[in-house]
Structures are given as C-alpha cells and as structure tokens.
Image 1 (cartoon, chains in turn cyan, yellow):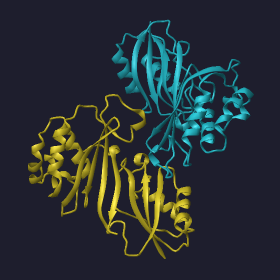
Image 2 (cartoon, one colour):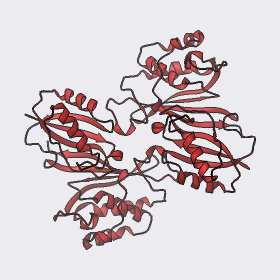
Image 3 (tube, one colour):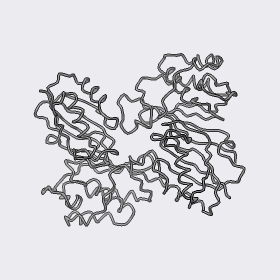
Image 4 (tube, each protein chain N blue to C red):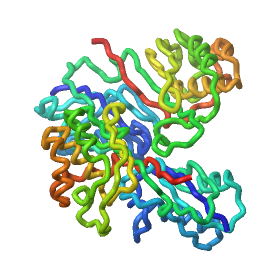
Length: 247
Length: 247
C-alpha cells in the first residue's frame, strides 16, 4: 500500500462543491469514481485539505489516497487525467509516507479572490471572477487589510452556521493585487473558517466603496458577531490557490 | 424603422457556431429568439459581419438589425443583456443609418488566436486557448509572418471546401504577441476565407516547431493548393476580435 499526494485544479462552475453529496456532481465524487474503476471496483477514499463550496475554484487543492496499485508517479498522473472529466486536472503526483495527511498535515492555505472592476461585462470571465463595476478606494482597503492580519477570533467573519468552537486563526498575508481589468485579493493563513474569505472580501468591498470606514475592523473583530461584518461575496471569484505543508 | 448596430461578445464553447442551423444552439438563433420576444412575435432578422464556427469565440462581433421599437440606445443594451443567455454579451449599441450593413460595410477584421505553451494543462483556459506545450522558435514564426503579410491568393490557406472564387486577400498585420503562459497571434486583414486563420496558425506552429522552414511560405502561396499548408488549428483558440468600418 502506498500513499499518494496530488495537487489538483478544478473549475468549480459545474460542481455542487468538493465534497460528496447525494444527487450532486462533486469533485470528490468524480475522483473516487475514477479510482474505483482503476481498482476494479474496490472503493478508494480520497481525503482533501478541506472542502470548497459550489462554484468555488481550486488552482492548487491537495488530496491524498492509499492504493495497492504498482504505478509510477507519471503513470498515476496520466491515467487519472485521461479518465477524469476535463474540469479536473491533476497537476502533480507524489508518493508520500503514511504519516502525511492532506487535511491534518496542512499548516496553511492560500486563497485568491478575483474581481473584475471594468464597467463592461466580460463573457469569458463570467464564471471566473466577480463583476463589481464600482469605483474602489484602494488605500482604504489596504488599511483594512493591515488590520485583519495577525491572530484574531474571526467569529464575525465566518458563517453563523459555523460549528467549530475555536475561531482563532492567524492571517499571515492579506494583499490587494492589481490584475487585468480588476483586482485580486491574496489571503494566506494557518486556516480559514466557513465562508471566511468570502465575508472578508465582501467587507473589504464595502470599505472600498466608502460604505464603511477601514477603522471599523477592530470593533467588528471584537464584537464576535456575524451581523457586524459585510455581505458574503459570491463563490465564483474564489480560488483555493495552494496548501502549505511542513517538509 | 431604425437600424441598430451592436458590438457583441460570445463564448463559443456551447454554440454550434454563429449561424442558425437546425437542431443546434447558435448565436444568431439566440439573438433572433430574444428579438422575437421583444417584438411580440414579429420575426427580426439579425445580420452579422460574418459567421464563426462551433467553438470559436467573439470578443467584438458586429451585428445589425432593423426595428420599429422606440427604445433608446441604453434601453436596447439593457433589455438584450437581460434576456440573452449569459454566454452572449451586448457590449455596445449604436443607431446607424440604413446604408450601414454589418457584412457589406465591413472593411476589415481582426482575429486573435491564443495558445498556451506552458507544459501543464490549465483547467481554466481549456476552452479559451489551444494547449500546445512544445518549444517554439519565435524568430522563425516572425519571419514566416512577414511573408504572409500583404496581398496574396490564399487558396492554399483556406478550406478545400471554400466556394468563393476570388481568394485574393490582404493581410495588414500578422503579429506574434507574448501572453500569459503562452503566445497570441494577431491577424488584421481586409477579409479572411473559410478556416484561413486556423490554417495560418497551424502552419505557423509547424514552422515554430521546425517541421517546416519559414522560407516555404512563398511556394505554399504560389501552389494554390490546400494540401501544401499545415493542419487546421482547433477552434477554441480563435477569437473574432473586432470588425472595422469606414466612419
């Protein structure tokens, strides 16, 4: 039995999210279906670094699985890419030892959120960036980003449905990047709560538009109440960009 | 009765091409369906600058139609965008006089062809650029591009099925641009024959790979035979970029 780690990309548009659910097309479902075929009907469980919601993309999601098959690294990559649908791509395959776990070994993650600010709609990016054609004050956003960096209780920035008790996370990087026809947020942290990046982005956009002042961030964090922060930005601008592990 | 000119974008992925065909989803079909609704059942004919094939995209296709409706420019744009499917976007609407004709008034066109040369597949561009992960000699391609510029009989660079007798066209610009993760060809000319850009691109790729020498271009043109040129590049890298009119 060998353990395989894969870095995968997927276009989240036509998935009901990463995780298997009844009557939904899911990324995990497609991966396990293909592995089942390769293993002649023996089910193989795929473990990911975490879930992504419907419509959310991944450039660098990480998964692992165990297999008795004697295939070389390149053989896995070719076989999986040949059998998977074209909205999932295996970018890298690597043999790892049994102590590696895609979720529990992860020490951090990077998310990106793409926003098209150009006034005109663009048919080619409609599923790949959030069209938000309003003037934004970049300086105000940058001030606010400085204030969310660091270690905080992010209760105000996660879905009210979040069941996890410990909502203290550390954001290492929160950057505003200039991109073609818009902007991109880069978020690097030791972990992110449910909807956390989308609520952070929604709040930043309200700050950029002048609906809130950047100095409101500390009091939102202090309040530990989801109702204090901004609205949840839509899923299709969000990308799980990479997952970090100790090597 | 007023004549309206529109600049439109479409994602060609899920269309059987621009032009109406039985049992196919087409761009013209969608446009005329929406106009039929707006005109309470009176059919309105849409005229485009030219067709595009299945899978080919348009950033700046031009159409015109005549309508008795009294709608302002912005009203047309909003109504059409609200009713059209999300893979067609009306970028601009303009009232023109009755002498304007989207096809016959066009004096030139620009096409772009996007190629991803990075070795790794990219899930987000799979329908929007041609993945061609081979080393290319840019200088050889540029030499060949110089040789196709100008006025020539392009019989060797159009589909053997082309019915038009006069195959003399003028290419004003034939450029190789560097793009993210790849290259882009820019073609500007007074007109392009059926499959001409895709055959030109396919031939340029063979030259870039060293399968042919750039100096073969004059003899291919001279030969007036489709079998002399390279293979037809796939549709999904091709974009009708803009259409030129005398103003």
